[in-house]
Image (tube, rainbow, N blue to C red; front, side, top):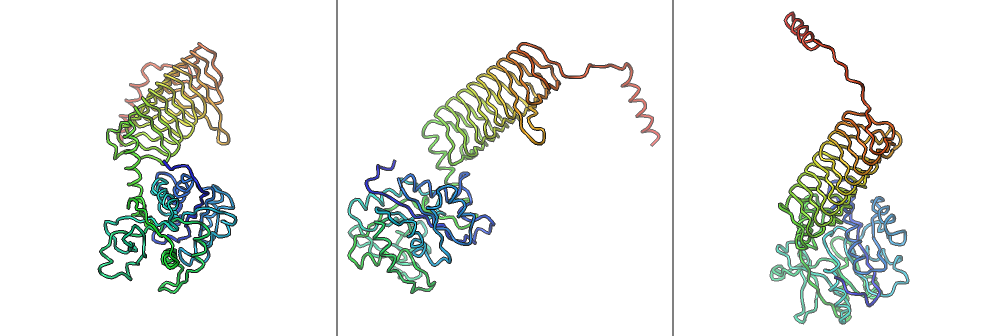
Length: 454
């Protein structure tokens, strides 16, 4: 857990990259991990650090990113870098949005969705211990093209050497630069004003502030983090790898607190999935965003849940679908091939087979027979169906909303119910059965004659 903030904090999130390697019409930072945009993961981390001001630097080529920032954080949180001229230039693009801010600032990246606030916190700890500039590094399994961190032997950072400029000895170093850093806001902006673009790309690099800080005799320190958390997403393959890591981490967190998963690798979670200790999740279950499952509930195989609440002791599935607004009560049963949307299902109620429950309420202890449909839509508007406590809905019933089935009432199997049913009444909404003696044998004989003539 991040400790209470002693100095004001701000964050600048760099999100101006074009993401051409994604080969997608969707801007890179709006692709999702755990059902949440990469950019939102970065914003969550900044807010989790207690940053009172968050500025996202977007590119002029991606109005969708700008719209996303405005919708979540408001106009003051958006800065535009156009044209892009490097990471240092991107941070300077945020300067107007930081006007009047006094305190510490952290620079992070919108395409690094796995980085948690607890992993960034050590940078602020170093600042509190007297560092002027704190850089986040990691030990790379395969350093490849990462910039190498040259330490001064006293716990400080002497310089960062890009791989293409490194000596053979320096290339053996596994301590690499992540690009994430923290400093006093005024100091960082002052150093960035001195950065030049005399390099092969003609860009202003954020990493140049390390050398400038050292030239002024400032204290530059390093905090190491897990390489997996600092993995960037630049391609569809890297997006899939980030998703895989996110899923493994979330499953491990849930199992550590007492959630049973009999085949965890087959369970897909969302960024905000809440499952309490004592719940059981069978194989091949998908949790979309907005799901809460209480302890003692069981989610059976091949079920899909989104925007739903499952109370203690309830059983969902197998092959069930809970859509947004579904609330499954204590010890209620939602069985195979049952879809529930925007319906509150009372305690102990059951819909065990092949039903659609949309818009309304099912009272405690009610039984919904196989093939029941809540006919909630007339092509223009949605209407509600209310089934009272202890009611029994016969198989293959169609309840045409708006309609109320009273407590304890029955509907006959195959009925189409278009009017309210009084409590404890039996409603029959089907045609009277008629019988034609000998019709079947005559029909078969006629068909056989027709077939023989052909």
